[in-house]
Length: 119
Image 1: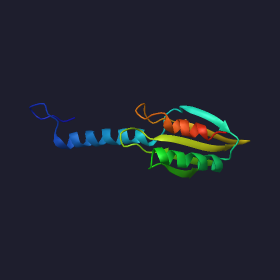
Image 2: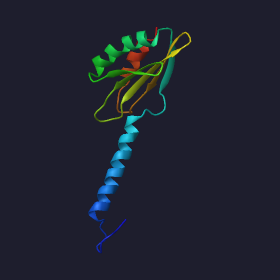
Image 3: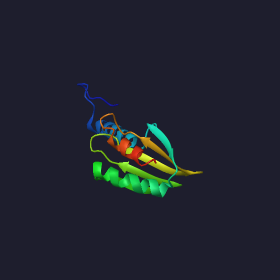
Image 4: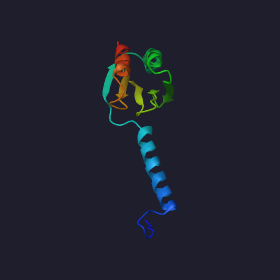
C-alpha cells in the first residue's frame, strides 16, 4: 500500500481496500454455512415447503421460497444477521430438510416451525 509522508493511506488505495472488505463480507452472508439440523420427512418437498412457508412468513414477513435442484429453498432474511435457510430436497421416501441458522442473534422460532411440519 502506498503511504504518504505522514503514514496515512492514499485515498484510492483505501477505497480499494474498503471495497474488497465489503464484498468479502457480503459474500459470506450470501451462502449458508454448516447445517444446524437435518431431518427426514415422509412429505414431498412441495408438501413440506407448503407447510413451512406460511409459518416462516408469520415470524419473518420477508421469508421467501424458490425452486432449487430436486426441491425448494426457504430463506428468512435478516437486516442485522445472516439469513436463516431451509433446503428441502427429494429423497427416496419423502424429503430431507436441512436447516442453516443464520446467526446466534436469531432465535429458535424458525427452526421450531420447520420441525412442526415434519410429521
